[in-house]
Image (tube, rainbow, N blue to C red; front, side, top):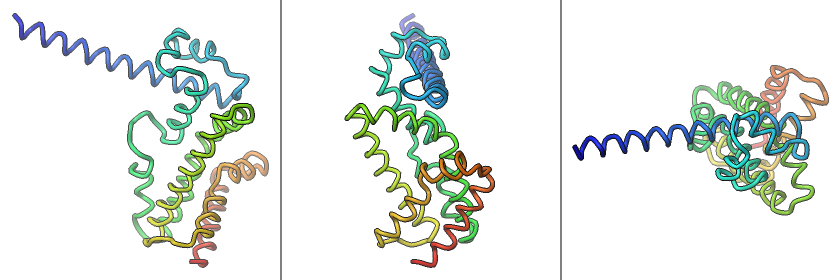
Length: 210
């Protein structure tokens, strides 16, 4: 009878792990929506818990604090899901190195639009929180540096060679930033298609500099 008991314990453990992962995903989904819609100050853990269908204590147990939840939620929004796969290793990022140079620049413009579309609201919440919290401000700078590295990796895939011009990298990093997306789409009223076309044209023009 011992093997059966062991099998049951393994099954129960696996089921609990799946349930815990599902709960975590539901909390993060709720957090992304609410932080994006209501900002940092306007979002409470009680509201996130209600939307996710869990107790506030469950959020504290899983994330420790509201600002830690914000940080993890932004990471998930950038990646698009909770899978532990680096952004640079995902299929949409690998497309930057496939096909003709024209195909690659279109893929870069599309990826930029996709990431900004799902992260703009929560990045605004992060910027809001950073104005009154030094730790969040530090995270904001870390995320900016991480984004620059991702831009460097993506650009090298698009161009097919290493880029050593730091000023050129900074220029591409700025052009593809969430701030520029915010100005063009939210302030200037561009559609997603118009943004993608504009970024493609910008990359095509800037390519002549290297």
